[in-house]
Image (cartoon, rainbow, N blue to C red; front, side, top):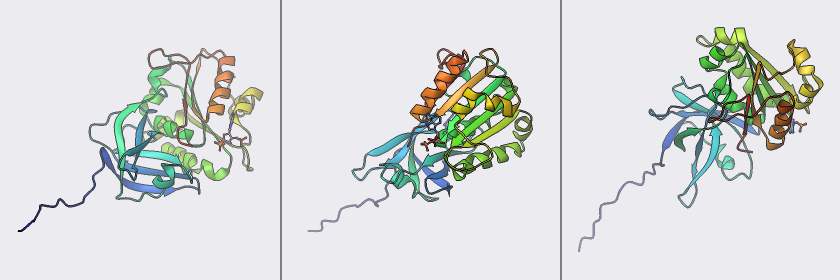
Length: 268
Ligand code: A2P
């Protein structure tokens, strides 16, 4: 008897698949990548989505990633650490243009302009990959509509780990749409802690000593004029919170805007 059965071609399409369009490796531990954007995806700058890959057992392995690209970009950009034995990033670091990743199109998060009360000066405090949500916010025209001054601080151990942020700021200042606002309002304050650079030290120590205000030529943080967003390791976030509370700022949320908001840099 002829037991011919119809066999489907073995094409594996991931649920919520998006295609990788570019990958850039910054250091042995850091890389960024761009993927196609689902047509229906709307997000607020500073929000995160769940992205990942399929595990061997066919189930998705997802982690929270801040969207680093601005909301007007056709594609989505992400900035990631590479953890050599990390379940996701040990594999994700090998993605190439043309590969697919999973992206759940449900953006959420607290590092959004709406979670802050109006103010004059916006501080964006990042360590390591915590700069990702701010990469989106400093390219959003609304950030410059709401604030007279936007200060991005980024603390990393070594100079090479600042490079993604350095190029981001440079491109933003030269950008044809956002460049004029950024040149007028954006200030960048990179620091390193374990390698010599023009500005050494943890931003927390520089805030406590007042060196950062002196270097930028501005008055100390005040609850009347200053607003903050914080994204780094848990220990960093706790320290900055204490410092900001010391300046009289209170933590806000989407439902109850206040003077500062915090989110952990997720992977790593
Ligand atoms: P340090 O080198 O003094 O630990 P990591 O690579 O461990 O995620 O750290 C990224 C950067 O954040 C490093 O420059 C590190 O400084 C700094 N950092 C880590 N913890 C804190 C903290 N509690 N307050 C301020 N900076 C911190």
